Image: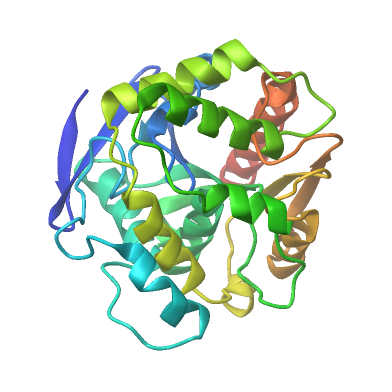
Length: 298
């Protein structure tokens, strides 16, 4: 897969669809490599007329790591939780700048931007700081960072903070346990498919320490709700009503903050993007893009 230099780092990316199709950028969440955007999902989007771009955020997959700057992110976590000012290796704003820089490096003036979980927060910051490069915004299972919103279920946080085993199969099983806990009751848990993605991720990059540094960036980001009031991009917010990590209140808060935003609630969906939900998600993204194009043409 190709990579480009952006903001002094290397970003690994992959494209689907025709080069002359309308660009659509996918931003993944905490500790997740670009392959978590399932290849079949990307191809279905490409089949609807998009040039789909997925990439590894900084500090995961085959993009630049920040081990030397922060070898043990867990040491900084208590200070972040107490609201202390610390010298972080990077922020979510830096990650939004990465997304904008990737488009620039590919010669793309503007794109539809879709982010999931932490990637949704990054996409929101993209809309705030790089509005000319955004055609539409889709924020999936994310939040504004508003501290007054309901928080994740404690048992889910405990799973995410468990020590990562050294042995490969134990890591696969622990990650499967987490994915199962995050999934909602409305869709079948695709054990074989999810295991394939987990193993693919381990094959690409077994180093999981970047997740801790990304967590520091997320927890120190604060709320962007006030700034979202100035977002002009047509916006779609997608959230499952059974999300145990980012409760649906975070989705409603995002939709309420952005003028004219549309909210799509998917019944029984947890913190994930199960294949059974793809048709509704893809149709909604296509509809948003079409309406935005009609407004521009009018």
